[in-house]
Length: 99
Image (cartoon, rainbow, N blue to C red; front, side):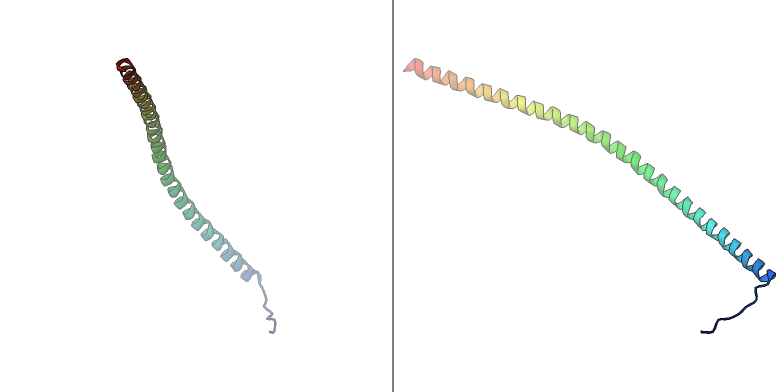
């Protein structure tokens, strides 16, 4: 390939400089548009964050209720076990007393 020799006059260099400046402005404008889109997306995610915080509060309430239910079940089991032991002791006492 044969190298092409061109003359770069001041006018052509000024024209190229103007094109480069114009390209820089267009790139800046496009990035500004992208920045606005990302800001909109971030605002939407902030809404999601608030909604998830609400879910967290609801789950904390559910945890407290489940812990209370577990305590009630343990106490109920202990009460039933004590009643059964008392019944067996009473039955054994009756059998021994009759025998």
